[in-house]
Amino acid sequence: QVRVVESGGGLVQPGGSLRLSCAVPGTITSTFWTYTVGWYRQNPENQRELVAEVTRDGNINYGDSVKGRFTISKDNSQKKVYLRMNNLQPSDTAVYYCKVETVRTGDYWGQGTQVTVSS
Image 1 (cartoon, rainbow, N blue to C red):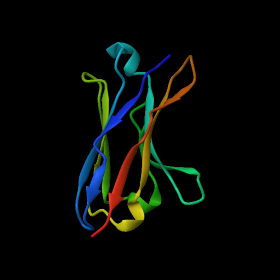
Image 2: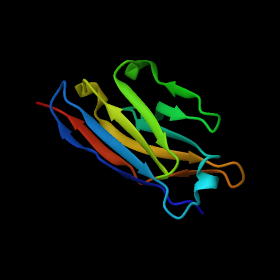
Image 3: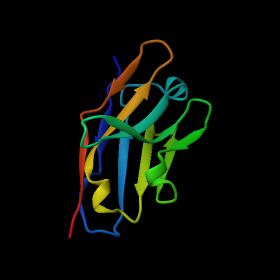
């Protein structure tokens, strides 16, 4: 079992910034290296859409709507993945979830963190 803990959500005005953190406590560093970790958000159709991910090979992918505004980074020593969100817009309002894809035991999701962009 892999525990996934998100933090950093909140209320921000349009044009503002937030940084989300995804921690994977209880995992040893050499195992964390093998994880693909991504941020997803729940859209109005109740589907989770990709925001950004860092693959186990070090590749980075972004959803089209956040390219140029969001930056994902992975700190293997801290066993954390960060999502820096700049120039936030009301359309970015959602619950953001962190997903950890392991090699051997499947995928694990965190509980989600709310991001609200409103004036």
